[in-house]
Length: 156
Image (cartoon, rainbow, N blue to C red; front, top):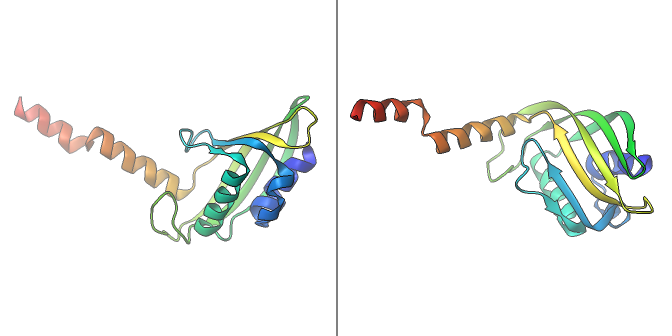
């Protein structure tokens, strides 16, 4: 399990080795960024290939360094890490910003019955600068912002 988690974070994501997808992931793998994009999980081996392509396009210098591994149960482990990435390409339908982000995170990996493939990856990480920008945009669109609230009160 440790080797699969290591290969995912270092070989697959950092070194961008898409050819490892079949070896690493169960056919029904589910990858979920629990904090920043929980409503859009990545599903399946092909989905994981697209995820790597999107990540590589948006953050070509993306890298992580593993800090610790911790056993959760006989089919799960937690891995803490830190890394860096510069947004040089489209990310969530937004143009490149050039922002450099340092981040930390913990992933919970779950494995199939014989622990030969990853079945779930739950990602808990600090934000990229682009994540914070996107949250601000969503809040403004949903709430209308302070000015709209103030104007509604004046109309009454």
